[in-house]
Length: 427
Image 1 (cartoon, rainbow, N blue to C red):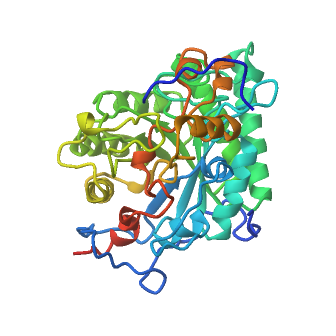
Image 2 (cartoon, rainbow, N blue to C red; image 1 turned 90 degrees about the vertical axis):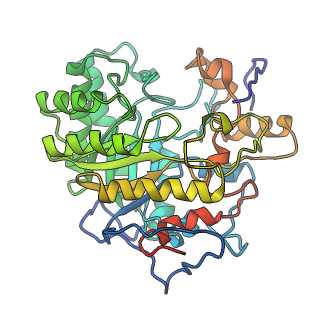
């Protein structure tokens, strides 16, 4: 259902799930072998990542999958067979699924804001499907009704007007409630992310004394509901070389209880991998924390397949990495190598929304109707009531479909095999 606002555009199953119930990080992560999946690729060259641990985390953010499937997207394996996308990911070496949770991504009439309309119901559906094929879950709380990132951390509608202490209590209660629901649904919760890209800003607050109250409240809920799960804090912009050291110091000064210091890394924004490993290793050395790349991605084509434009193109390609299937695989392989062999305490790499492909296909108008109805674009026009400055002006389709690991028809790319091939290589 469309909101009553003229559109402005710029380019830019539930399976059986009660198995693997709980939040147990002691289980060894599933890894493919030659008996599970053919590691052969006739077109993809992969240099082996030395010293790759058996329990290394290969993750995929797949938060938009239900909205995409509602919009008509279907997924196919390397042989062209239509299959459950989570089984395809598992067979290509993915052992974790990351899913974001927004508190209430709907307007007063129930119209979704888009970006997958990622509420707890969406997370429960994904958690069941991931567990059914043997994958663990990284639960990513934004503590917002829509996108939270370094530039915006908006307070959920229901929490507006609350004091800092009241919001901290709300963070605790909401985190606990959602985790209980996920556990009851059979999700295998291995990690919980308390906030998303919280660079000096979280849930409407910019003072670290307040930010860390929220983080501590979320962490306390995780410890109570999922005592074996890892608590993750997530930041971005590693290219600002002193910032991660500052974040680590703030977290220590305010005694925040967490296990993993996580970073986003997009090579077209975030500098070199050598710098990435240096700033993260400094945090690991100083504070003894595990290190995770919570988001990374790169393009396989410059083509725009949904008539909305893309974030990545020839003008901002990373040096040494052509925007091709091979270039995409090389980038992911090198990020894995950086975490394994150049970063202290590195435990894993998550690819961001590798399943987010374009919907429709024949025209912008056809696609727009699907984005608005199912929330399968980055934002709908309805998001304007919550985020008038950004989504209210630039709502529309997906700007990252050329960074997916499936082509525009939903068929798995050869580069998806990188996770299964990394440990052995493919020459």
